[in-house]
Length: 159
Image 1 (tube, one colour):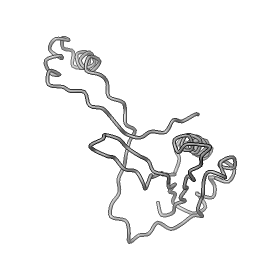
Image 2 (cartoon, one colour):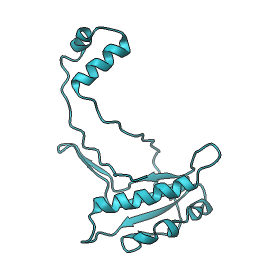
Image 3 (cartoon, helix red, strand yellow):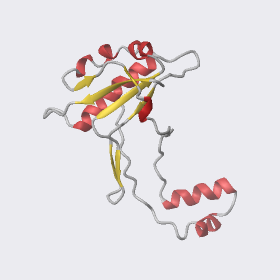
Image 4 (cartoon, rainbow, N blue to C red):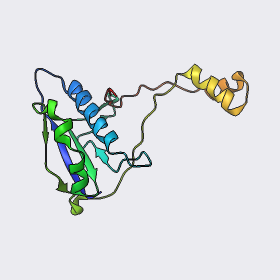
C-alpha cells in the first residue's frame, strides 16, 4: 500500500476523545463496507501512528490520529470520506492522499483482533473439553496460572 490519508481528531470540550473515536470509526466502518468487492474483502489498511502501550500501567492509548492506506490515490478518493465524515467536520481534519515515504519504511507488521482472555475456571473447562481430559487434569495444568489484566485500547463500534 503506497498511499494514505491521515485523519486527526480535534479535541473538543463537547466530546471526549473516546467519543470521537467511536463516532469516527463507526463512519469509517460504513465507508469500508460500501467498498467491499465480490469476495466481501476491502483493499484498505489502517494504522494508529500514535498508539502507545504503557507496560507498567498495562494501559494502551490510540492517540488522536488514524491513517487509512490504499494502493492508489483513486482508491482513497473512492472511499468518499467527505460524505461519511460530513457530520464530524468540526471534530476531524482529513489530509489529501499522500505517498508513503519509502525511506521511512523499516518493516511491516500485521496485527489481528485481540480476544479477551477467559478467566481461570473457563479456561480449565475449555481445555478439558478441547483435549478430551477430565476437569481435574485440566486444573493441574492451570495451577500456576495467574490472571493478567489486559489494557489494550479499543473503540466502541456501532454498526
